[in-house]
Image 1 (cartoon, rainbow, N blue to C red):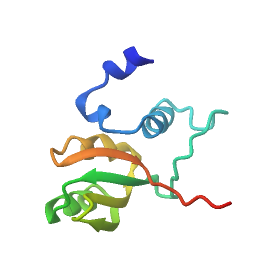
Image 2 (image 1 turned 90 degrees about the vertical axis):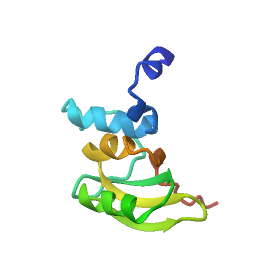
Image 3 (image 1 turned 30 degrees about the vertical axis):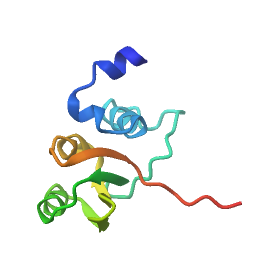
Length: 110
């Protein structure tokens, strides 16, 4: 597994493994396989993600231009929560001010 991680492109290194697995499953046509991820995908094929980045109007516009929707953002905490098409996550990760993309953190209850 570590060899696989080391062979990833710079953009793919900025994307959480669960998201990469989901992208690859859907690309390879194995989306109905038994193994599932906790990645939340809407009916339009967009993943709910948390993006660590330097938040700018240009980045928010980039998310919209690739078919995504920024739900919330914080310049102070360098975070964006957004719905982003799975197939566009790598393009988003290529942007210099994006540091990491992961599935959106979900609340935990007892």
